Image (cartoon, rainbow, N blue to C red; front, side):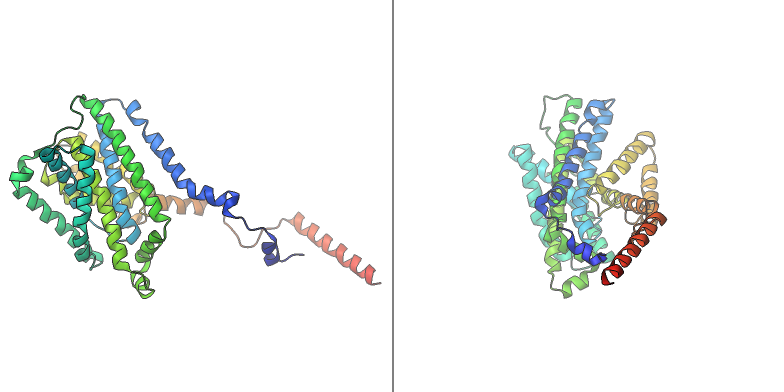
Length: 370
């Protein structure tokens, strides 16, 4: 009889060329395509223009949360200050369109690149600290920019707001919502693909080592400072693009909202709720929390009930689902499913047959010797 090790050695190795490796690499891309195709159905089934606009807001949240997850999910650094990059992308895009007449798409990309460049010195300073100190630094960044843009009224419009020219002035409002829904959907697909590429790269593996044990990663020679900075800049870029598209869609900017610490906290809640270690975790969180916020604002807009509900949900997630809904669901499935065993279970009939076969073999061997 072959031992377990002998049976294992006798099995032919399955190469990636046989199909398993290629399918495994393509699976996230196929999943992204399926999810994007399903979401693309929303404009055709939404009952009215308001629900369509709510879909645009949810997609904006999804891009924001997925972009945040490039930093927060891979490195474990919880930033409440990504609203700063959202606001810089919004105002940068608006000011370029207003004062230079630049194409709206080019203006968005230029503003996002400029935000990424500005993030480099900010990252050098902020990423020198960890834990709660890092969180405080990111909060301070948002508050400083909020005060700056509110006081610089000659350029930003201050509290009076800044009106952004619409990129499609001939469109009616429903068509405007529909067009930007697909624009945000395309941006979400690009952001999800970027997250997937990082997740499956050596760079992503290094970022995960920072998340799991930064001191150990440093002792093994990993350039943790550079790794965190690159992730910070990439994350800021995608968030800034989301901010630029939001400015073009909404058409009216206010520093109080664009640089809102509550907005940054809400996006963190979305990512944590879905699960920062999953590709679609931030998207799931954005759909759940974004839809709930729209419901609360629509029905309780005269109160601050939506802020109370957001705070309670954040507390519940941190206490009971710190790794997200998808992680909890996966653990529940493993708990309820059949338990794997390193030793194969044998039925009574199989055991009897094995014993008879062993006895027969022993008798034949004895007869042969006689």
